[in-house]
Length: 365
Ligand SMILES: Nc1ncnc2c1ncn2[C@@H]1O[C@H](COP(=O)(O)OP(=O)(O)OP(=O)(O)O)[C@@H](O)[C@H]1O
Ligand SMILES: [Mg+2]
Image (cartoon, rainbow, N blue to C red):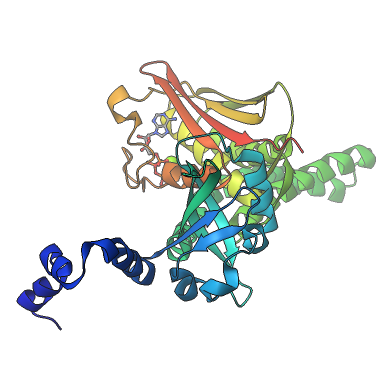
């Protein structure tokens, strides 16, 4: 290990200047950045060709620097992310634009990168794109673990309410079986009611099983109304315990490109929060709307509302005002929504209630 003086001797600006003449100082700095930086830096022309790529690519993705220079960047990006970029990247925007992109490494595995893109005007008058990308696989893995464990915890919390709710149809089934045993006449009528009751139990248990499954990441076009109906069936059991009505209103149904299980987890978290704030009962409105390219799902409660000075804290981890809360529900929900390129909007009026609105993009193609 270097001692303090040695290391200082090595890295002071004065020493560097002494060793090099000033004209090649920038080259030397570039060399240091290229060899030691954690980021992948590339300059891409408007056709998508990589004119420059930092040497760090050798360490990060395993390709040789020469191997990639002049190649089309598209070829290394996951097709789904390519579509997203084509839809959303704006060449005219001057500010940085941030994307999560899966990039293929030399052995064919896709790695997730947080990528910042800038459009830069070059001295030759041409526009080029500067991309700075950082491997965030570790962060993603930790995030997924958190989502998974939170999901299991919701399943556990809902299980009690569901078991309670299943008891009612079971009791009536038992009653009908006893009637049949006693030899009553209008059997057909009873059979129909019994099948309906069995169907109720079936829906509730399959929904509970669905959310207890490990976290998935299988995105496809999903019908939002169906997802909401499933979640409402599940949470009605919880709402009934507190005399709360779940009122579903729909202006326009739509499909959204998403992982069904993750988005349901968000709906459950937000409706569960609303239920938990309304201990005196009342009504929660769940509204589905469509506005240009957004699908908007709003959860509107009649709870106590949220003081203005804490609204910005809600999405932070571990912020909770509940005795048994973890304070992770909203943070995870927000993360899931952002992973789907959407956003979560919170509005609240103290004494009147709160509205949590989930915005998810609708693909026009
Ligand atoms: N609909 C709401 N009305 C009023 N306050 C809310 C509402 N939803 C959330 N909050 C506030 O935000 C805090 C954080 O919510 P979050 O869902 O992240 O965690 P939690 O509900 O406390 O715990 P957990 O979700 O683990 O059960 C809550 O403790 C509550 O103070
Ligand atoms: Mg919560």
